[in-house]
Image 1 (tube, rainbow over the protein chains, first blue to last red):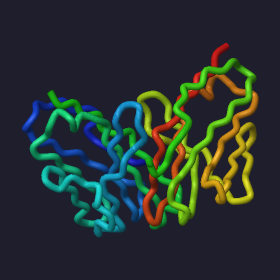
Image 2 (tube, each protein chain N blue to C red):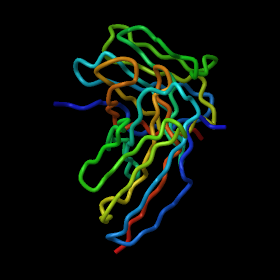
Image 3 (cartoon, each protein chain N blue to C red):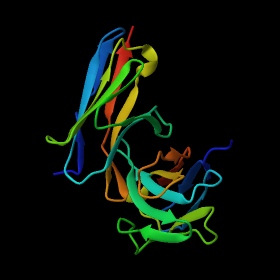
Image 4 (tube, rainbow over the protein chains, first blue to last red):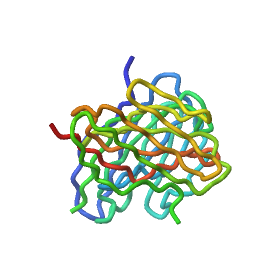
Length: 115
Length: 108
C-alpha cells in the first residue's frame, strides 16, 4: 500500500516568491495534517482537515499561508510571499480516524529553502 | 511553559546500555500519548502508543504517570540501529503536540 506522498521533495526559492506543496494521503484516511518542522524541533501543527473541512487552522499564519483540500483527498499548502524564516521541512500526515487518537502516518516532507 | 517538554539530550550510550527518556505535558486533560522515532532527514514514524497501564514491545517499555503528567520510554540492550531522535507526542483535545525530541546515539 502506498504511503503518504508529498511533492516536491526539495524546493529552493527567493524571498517574496510564492511556493506550493502537494500531499496525497493514504487511501481512505479522512484526516490530513500539515506540519512545519524546524531543525532540532518537533513538528508543529499548521492545519488539520477532516475530509474537506479545516477543523483546526489556529496555528496557520493566515497572512501568507493558505491550504485547501477541495475534494477531501489530496491537499495543497501555499505560501505567498515566502520569507527567509519559512525555511523548514513541511510535513504532511494522515490518519484513519479523527480526534488525534489514531496513528499518524507521515510523508517524506518538502524541504524548503528561502534565499 | 511548553505544552510538551522532553529531556534535552543528546544521549550518547554504548551498545547494550539501558537508556530512559522522560517527557512532561501541561494539559491534564490529555487523552492519548505516543512515542515516535525520527531518523536523520526522515519523517517521524510511530514507535509505540503509551497506555495507562504501561506497555512493552520487545526492548522498549513505555510508562504513563497521569498524576505527575509525564510519560517515559525505556530502551534496554541498546542497538546501534536505535540511534535516532525520539519524539514524545501528546493528544491535547483533538490535536497532537510534539516535543522537541531527544537525540540518542548508540556507539559500538
